[in-house]
Length: 242
Length: 244
Image (cartoon, rainbow over all chains, first blue to last red; front, top):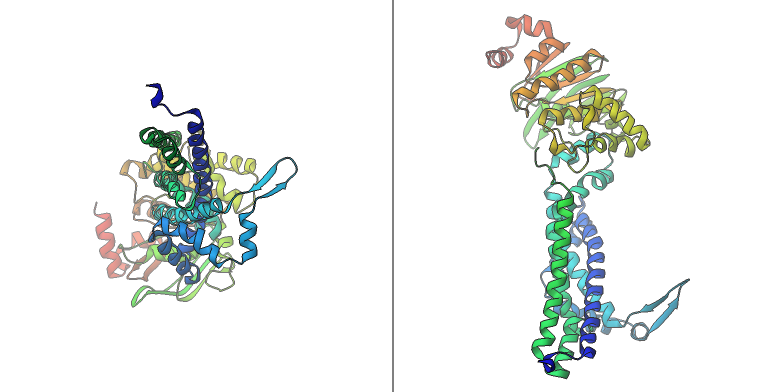
């Protein structure tokens, strides 16, 4: 029985990988939320000069596989960059700010974060857009009638409501980001899937290695799900009676 | 206070406003009525620039609505509007609904805005409702909050776009009571409504519209007292709305 367990060293590898998965998906989700909101606003802008580039961006990132995008950022972009910049990105850097050190991450982190952020942002932008569509047009009219300027109408009336409407699908996109982060193993990012593959290769304990990884993924997604339900319950539904 | 001169508007080929002209003096209460699709809602929305128009001139409180340089948000801040579907902001409490535009448009402090909100909430008979969400109120209560929200901005005039049309019959009275009281205080009001009882009781003047044109514009005693002197379309309309 005991020889079925993974040695602590290998469990440590999995935990380290899990931290990387959490960090990359959390950072990418946060950045993608901001970027997705901006993309959504650009997509809805009355001028084509904003709306069309945004539409092109959304189509490009939504309609190509994430794996190909990651390869592009890791290999394709690297090929386009000047040699000096590439060398700088590939060597470790440390800065000491007032109280803490900042470490520039290896290039696969940068490429993985970039790829996952841009991909997720395109989906989040569409969730936001659906949320904006769910806000009755009369709301913006009433806000304008009170003297709010166009940006204030968005800031105080449309976006807060659109965000609430978009919250459940938005959480779904965050769960996808966690699961999609596993693809970054293809560019050498040592996250959970990469780590479980490593453990499996070293120990041949396939079931244990991937089993633990699976449980960690399920646990993370379940936490997001619960957090979402908690937020939903704390805030009463909008416009139950209108 | 409000001067409308030869205002026309087209949706493509369809003319929705056909050379409308009228004047509304300070303190006057004017009811606009007519069959649906007659352009009355469109006309009232041109007064605060929510509906652009293609021809003519509208001047509100000395400001030309259609002029290219006009700061419309600034004008709208002084012209209260109440909608058929209330349009309270569902993500904000009643208190926040009343305070939002006071704070972000007029630059009042939160305390000042809440004090003003409390005052008007009491005036519409909803003093204890500040912490409710709109979804927790009845239609009549929501519309009274919407009126209070507009009044908090110290408007020079109030526009009502079918304020009771979306209400259950038993709630129409409470909203009309607030409007009657407001008229009694000397507020300049333009009301698009089918409530002919309200028109007869408080309106100084009645405007009748059909197919985008103002067909009749006369004192309300004349409008209701001298049926035979009305244009034919207005007579038909009155016969239909007053028959029950």
